[in-house]
Image (cartoon, rainbow, N blue to C red):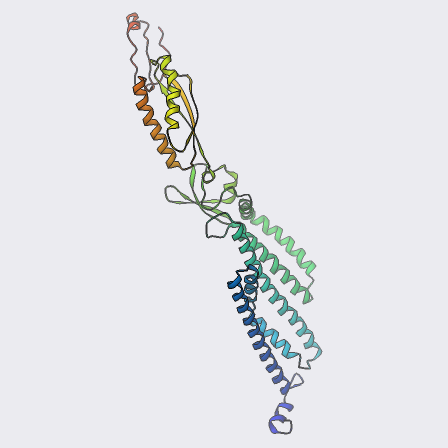
Length: 379
């Protein structure tokens, strides 16, 4: 070929002291390597995907996802570097090619690790989550983010070290800068760690009905900084994670049964025999209700204008609407039963004795609805 004009042309023209024919040969080698590698990666990925569909194995799905993270740009650079091996490069270019090999290799490994970490952590939290929500939990998001930061920090330090940078001083400067940044964003970091605490300790989850102070609603989202609650009136309440942990939280989603304590009052004209029958009547009414367990009913004490009773029972289902239906049925049944017994519910009243009118002492006391009890007047 060198005897022909075409061969002489490629043999005489040089670039960096290397004949053009060698450059063409290196380009052909690079193209062949890239095509073969691309076809091999595609074949391996399809085989792994087919294996995943047949056997439903998480390992093959993970490997297929990792293989799909192969970068075409880095693969082309690797092919060019392989093609460059057929060239007799100068010494200074050989060193640069070696450094470039390290950069290409560590970047591709980092991309594979990045995809593997993301896929693996998402699968782990999907298996272990107890929430039915489709959103990723704060713990999963924070863990994936932290793993990615650690991974790419290591990659960056390795690349700088390979380029001859003194990473010891660089790491020390990063530490000082990190302290300054942490002081500047300590409130944000406080919410981040509060989010981690919520994810680990799980005082509530997405979908739980909670009461925080005077606010009540259903948890819609637990983020890295805030928690969003849908109130009963319809509006969305956004609270910082730190504020959520500082407050007392009542989680009604985890309520298994509801303990009910209620009181009622009877008038003082009730006889002792009637009062003895009242607890038994209330007990019978409660036991007749579905989803209830009777605890106790007692004549509690003597009020200023009434005879006080206290009743305790358990609703075996945590539903609030069910509790209200049961309480309504109990109240109506008590009104009917007490009417048959001949006792009346008491209401606030006041009896006034006037010392200057002795004949008033013989008059019957007339209670006044809505008035509070007061001591007798004196002269």
